[in-house]
Every structure is written in structure tokens, then in C-alpha cells.
Image 1 (spheres, rainbow, N blue to C red):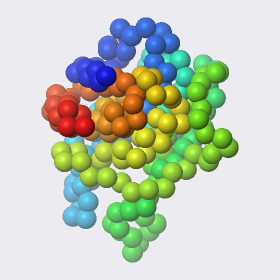
Image 2: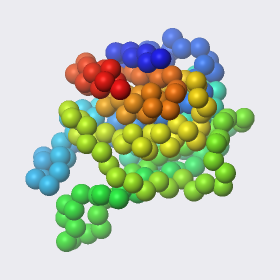
Image 3: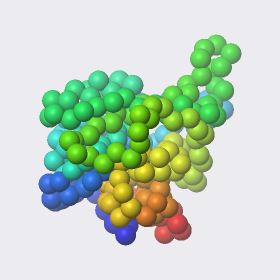
Length: 212
């Protein structure tokens, strides 16, 4: 089952029952101003990074509706705020890392490549965890999706889904973007609820999910 909602995630989540979602996997706006394209890669990400998001409000709703685990991909500057907000409500947290095996070579002659992305993981007591003594560092390539400049790869979303849910469970992505979480749900036998505020992005993700 795939349930896609066009609208503001706070409004849509307010309609969901408390404890109704076993697992949330999402990639929030990084609250950064875009830069012009530099030639080697697409730096201007449209509204994907610059749309403001109130982390504390979002966390409050995610904690209310989630019965198990939450994964939030975010900017480096957002990690501490996210962790503190989740710890304050009694959740156990970890910082997770995606180690890109194919980072952009941009400015590589001057400084280290930008090859890492960060995620804050949080869980409630009794949450599903299908890994044993696993280190939360995943190495693998980024993926291209037509119409999107910065999609999370499906293989990575599958890893998170299989770690923190069982077949038949419902996964929520309140910042759906490219729909990678939804594609991963379809491939792993999970139900998916996706929320996206931008109509153009929503339409592109909708078409992508219809094809899977």
C-alpha cells in the first residue's frame, strides 16, 4: 500500500493517531541557502535545502505518532538540535553516517571531498531492531533520479527499513522528496505513507512510485 499526501507535514501528521507508525525515515530540509551551480555537480537544489523547518515542532509530532524508530537525515548543524530534542523526550539516539563511495571531485585539489552525510537515529523502548552489534556507517554510491538533484539512494533506505521494521509494517516519510523511501518500501514489502508540500516534487515522486 502506498498512501501519498500533498500538503504540509505538520498538518497531515496532526491527523494521524498517536503510536500509529512503527518507523519514520526522512530527509529534512537543511535550512541552507543554495549556491550557483559550479559545473561539476548540481549545487542549486531548488527548495530542497532552503525551505525552513522548525525542528522542535517536527520532532514533537514524529515522537507522538511513532511507536518505534525515527531516522532523520540532516545537515551537520542540525544534528545537535535533533539529538537534544529527541533525548529530552526519553528516546535513545545515535548519529549515523552514509559514507559515499562516489563523492563529487569538486575542489578535491584544495580540501577533503564532501563524502559524508549524517542521520540522527532515535528509538523508543521495545522498538524493532533487526541488526546485532552493527555499526551505523553505510558505505555505498549516490544515485541519480531524473528531476531530483539530491535524492537519497534506494539501497540505503532499504538498509534502514530492514533494520527497524518488519514486512507489512508502515513507514512514514513526512518530507518525501524524490520518493526513495517509498521505492524501498515497495521493494521490501512495507506499506508507505509519504507527505510532500511542493506540488511539482509531489507529482514527480508520484510518477516514480507508480513505476515501481
